[in-house]
Length: 351
Image 1 (cartoon, rainbow, N blue to C red):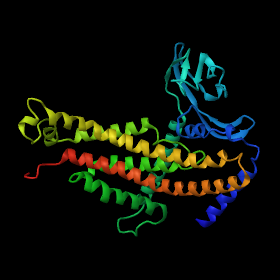
Image 2 (image 1 turned 135 degrees about the vertical axis):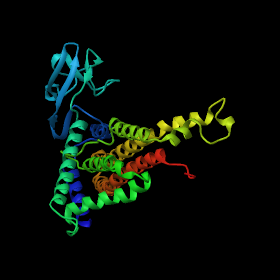
Image 3 (image 1 turned 180 degrees about the vertical axis):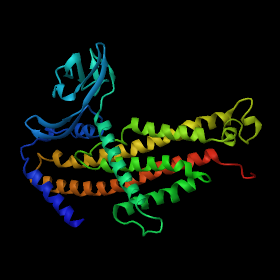
Image 4 (image 1 turned 60 degrees about the vertical axis):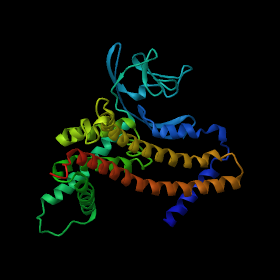
């Protein structure tokens, strides 16, 4: 760690030395942070200077007033016009400001957009990596017997994670009959963990803020919500609509039943917001700390060196913390999903 920290410090000092002419007002930390955490129709890799950027174009699939159109995002202009629009083909444009910022519009109105955006592209890459890891591990077991020695290396690491999640999270949370929920809960854990780890990589195929996108966390929470409701037994629904409380709390005004019914939706909502907020905030803080180097570029050399060194040290600390958060957030989502499923299947104590 000390060796890596020294290298990062040297890189930061070299970076500061190479940009003495940069002015603080030329750099917007807000734009850099938002650029990292928001979704987009092209994959911005880095700036090359003189208004040029290295961008990976992505497929655009939209339905406008003239029908369906499929083309490459490179056909949109790189810079916005006076109206804040990046003009493109078929009378379409990408809005860069206003309430439709980041959306493809036609005559100022959003169109039906099914494009492969940056978040979707990164998600596909993460899924492919996850499938390769799991299938390679499964192939190892197909060629061995139960009496063979335990695997080592990467396969052993995957087995350790699987056994930990099953024995310490899924089994205690779900309880009796947990086996049929293992595939879903393991998928949640490994998908979230893979997306979180890949999001720490600052260049393709990483750098995607997948679990920091509320649409992704909404879908994951929705899957848990559906699983919980279909797993609920008669006691689960009885405790919601006719709980064992004094009658005046449930009739004629159903105070407790209403609270319990609302609780059906607050549980998955908490899952969605917890994962989204933690991952988005972690990415934003890490990028914001790195921006300190550029914000002090116009200051005295002593200020540049001291603040750049502080920024690198804090960035290293945040990256180490984010590595831990990647695992914790995947574990927490899986654990809470298992607990919610277990609560829907619990039997009364006297039975």
